[in-house]
Length: 496
Image (cartoon, rainbow, N blue to C red; front, side, top):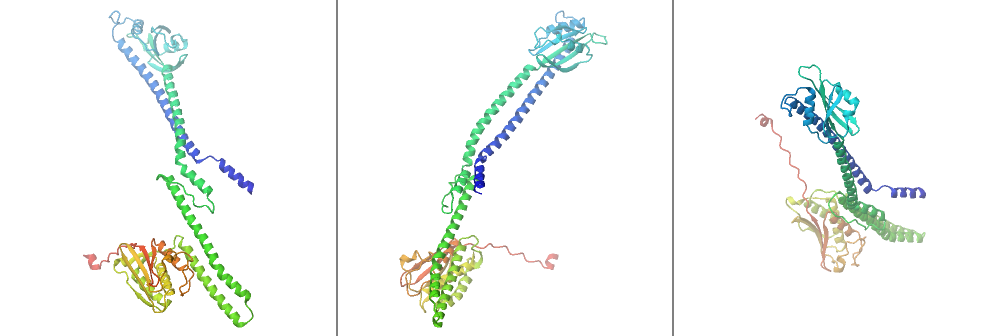
């Protein structure tokens, strides 16, 4: 199993990175696009060369027809014969560098233009024989020793003759233009390859910077252990990769909070449950056969088990308060919440219970978790009962102002020393003995978590011998109001 795991890890480490794959696919797509452009450009260049050669052949044919309708430039008289016409045209016309003219008379090449052509087709017996058989203007392509060429054969007949007495052959050599086109294509290929190389280097650098947060995510995830959840990724920018890093950081925050909550739960549970378990075990080990002693021991064991049950319930409540879904917000009438809480709290002890104030008006309806807030107020009331004597006053109240909800419990008990006020909302914190007993130390911590889950806080104002005032301060959230349905029309209104 260890060897397989090591092999798998080695294979993963040797895999192609995302940076390489992304750059490779991009370069492949760009290379394909460049190849298509070069091929299309090459086809267009060669097609244009062929079209230009055909157009030049047509232009020479038109020039020859126009020349034949005129007079001999040397004598200023009409041409006396086909030979004279062909000789006059060949002497008058100057072919371009990749062009040649010659005449065919009596199945033989007769005259040609003065410039030396790239290839002497007038010496090609097969080509001359083919031209001598032409009786109508003909164009075509032929391969020569100088490369491909386009040609045109124009038959010439004497006035009144039924058959041509001679032919004018015009040849356009394509090799020079093709060489220029190939040079252009090679230049495009070199430029494209250079551009791809530059793009590859620039893309490698840019991809490295863009994917840096992803590598940081991987490296951070690899370094994270159960005891090291404090690492975070530096987030810069607002693109998708930056959002991924931010999301990963938030996930680490949730994981760290979950592990911390789990660790605190285990530490708290182990710390608080160890004492009652020790007490129970000690009394059971020393319990004798005396009925009174057994009854006393069983009573003590029952009390400790009940205290353990309350501890477990409070610990579970605190653990749940750190998870999503702890609150169930719904429109709640805060006035009813205060009144109903007072009705429940009166059973906690013989005190002078009263209500200072209740929210009124449309703002009395808020989007909160009414059950959790009731639980928090009841816990504050129980805390007030635990630190007051019969006949002392305990007042509950609530108000909504300036976008804040304030719910409070005031008492006239023994008060809280200033140095204790900043610790009373910590888990398992117990203040000095005031003669009213001690609780589990979780009640006020639960109140604080309920307030924090609502986005608020819980505060205390107290002085020794002057009682205490606990206030839950929350942001006000108005419930979503759905429009009331339109009243149905009566039959008479519908008919109207």
